Length: 46
Image (cartoon, rainbow, N blue to C red):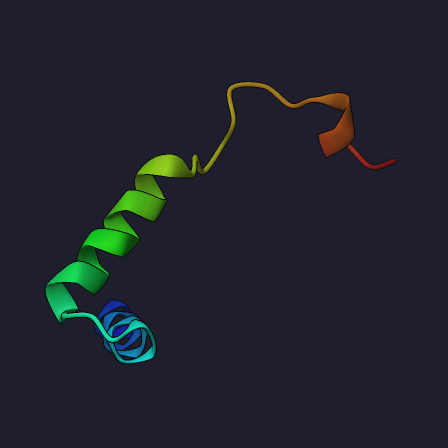
């Protein structure tokens, strides 16, 4: 349900179809890893 709402919002904001909004979300999730293979020193704040 939340995903569908996000698709509708993206479609309205960017003036695109729901299918294009779904593709945007899929592409973003492919580009972004949930857990990196390793952390750099910049990622660790002490």
